Image 1: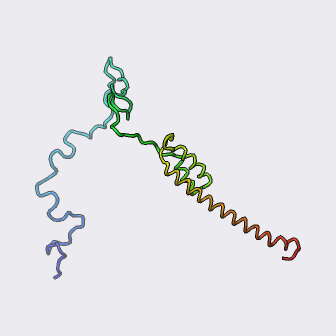
Image 2 (image 1 turned 135 degrees about the vertical axis):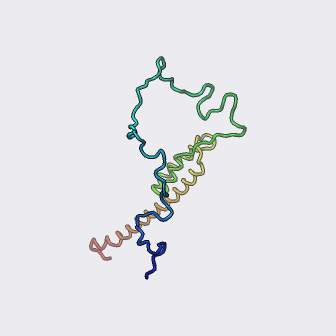
Image 3 (image 1 turned 45 degrees about the horizontal axis):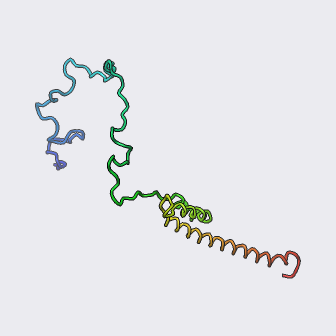
Length: 177
C-alpha cells in the first residue's frame, strides 16, 4: 500500500486543485448572508444622473467678488501703527550682472570683465541698489586672470607661426635655408 501525500487522509482520493483548503468556506447549513444579492422584486439599481433642474433661488443673483478683508493692506506690508523690529534692515537682491559675470568665466572671459565692472558699480556700498559685491570682485579677478592666459596663448601661437614663416620663407623664395 502506498503512503498518501501530506495533508490527505488515506482513502480520500486526490484532492481537487480548485477546492478551498480544509476549514475554509461556508459551513454546513449556512448560505449567503441576509441582505446580500438582489432582493425579491428588485431590479438593478437605476443609473445616477442629474437630479431635477434646480436654479438659483428666486430674487438672488450671483454673489459679489471677494476682495481683501477690510483694514488690511497689501500682502507683506506692516499693519497700521506697527513697523519693522528695531535693527531690521531689508535685504537687497543679488546683482544679476555679478552672477552672469561669474558664468562668463567659463564662456567668454573678456565679456566677463565688462560685466563684472558694471556689477561692481551696481553693488557699491553707498549708492548701489543690489548686493553681491564680493561675487562681482571674484568674477572680475578670475576673468582678468583667464583673459591674461588667453592673450599669452594667442601670442605664443603667433610667435610660433612667425618662426615657421621666418624659417620657410627664404627656402620658398629660392634662397639658402
